[in-house]
Image (cartoon, rainbow, N blue to C red):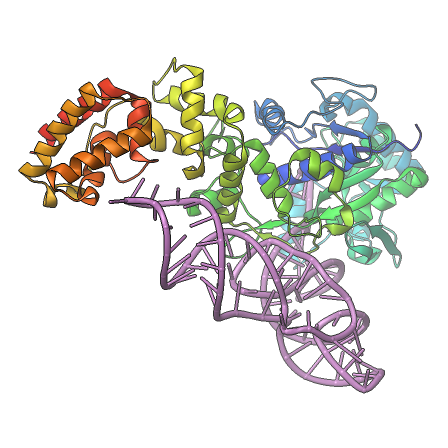
Length: 504
RNA sequence: GGCCCGUUCGUCUAGGGGUUAGGACGUUAGAUUUUCAUUCUAGAAACAGGGGUUCGAUUCCCCUACGGGCUACCA
């Protein structure tokens, strides 16, 4: 019980959920489930200025879509709540004050503006073990004056007092031994003037209180890890400190830096899990769900960006990933995102999925085009006919809409040049033929078609494409005789008649 | 600038002191498919550079280069 594996994903509700975040969720989840541990969702809403309405609900929806269920969260509760940091506000001040008392932190009265102007004047200004001697804080102001300032309610923050000339090191589960010189780390703010903790304080306090055993986060956190390590020590919790793992970043496909929302818009692919519309700017960012990814494919693709099981296998179900996941098989370097490969994963998942599994997704796609109330058996058989030609879910509409409605337009250039009266006659005869003949079986139908072509002395090859265009409208789709049998005798005849007119 | 992390085909990666450096996406060529896609076959394509260590380094060590991250009262 004491050594239970507990991990957390701790987003701040400031906007949409980026795929880097989803991958962090996934690795947390895989690790937790593999070890029969718990996965916790904690909302880090300590920055009221950046708080965005609806972001938390959105994150919860993303998790739901991915099929990842937190064991504890603001929604489901748990024994370590509350799970929103804004609701834990009272706790943090206590710990910050404790640190001040112990001499590990201090009050600082400098305003944002003052510090800002310092940064203007002094190049590479940093609030650190040197510069704090020159600034307005409880280290430079006499004790009584500090007390008075606080009593008067003077705005102040609490900063960590970084030691000088100390080596701070730890073992990262992915990178191994990592170390920093304390002189290079600034005196980070722990408690803000509004009484809210910064990430640095909150993450340590809550990881401790929530008994987190392993902390996985993006590599961008590596430089602030010495602050966190020290806090664990100063608060006297060193023995309970979680094991750290800093995950490699997901990078832009073409250039420099980590992948951002803008890259998606610029290069034309989603970066968020689900569509996100900023409630204030109304700016919209595409999500993988909405462009037609299967959640399994999405997760599979993300996992492979930095992880593999050591074999050539690339397609993994969530269950498989849970059993095979291992931290030491995570690549250290960042990965450039490749949308082409991402789509390949989705196509593979569609191809390998049973029609019954795909059914609800395909139904939804058709409903968007007002094709509703399709008999399930019929839709199932159509899914099987076209699934291997679909890459994204909306492709099912492109690839199968003609089963439900006659083509509105024809790829006329594909027929017209070779269209002639002999062919018209053939199709008219074919209609007569169909009216009398057997229509159950596509092989019989094909035989019929070919026999008639031979009788009329026209090459079958000359007739196949026109027939396809008649039924489908374009040069695509499954076997043409399969399509004909599927849509039925009536409809086939109608379409041929309509097309003969259109081809004139 | 400083600090930290990283570096195998265009991309995601496997490998690891002696290999024809493997796979996948993409790409090229061909086959199949009387549409397109699928499928199949074949091809081009990589160990950043320099020093060590070693009989032998792509693999271990160091340096350089390059890439990335951080450098807020944001997370």
